[in-house]
Image (cartoon, rainbow, N blue to C red; front, side, top):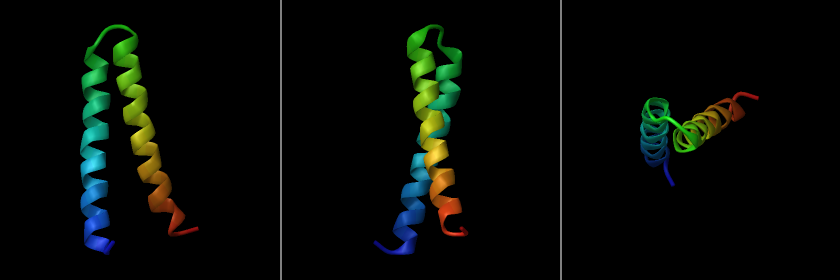
Length: 55
């Protein structure tokens, strides 16, 4: 996979994860909490992958 493909995938994952956090925040109950946690996990994975290059 070339770098441009990786950047496109990372951008899509970021948008989906951020959307899950925003949409989950508006929901009441465990379903909303689960959406927020999945979105947060996606954002943390992206942050880990970015910082891994500069270790």
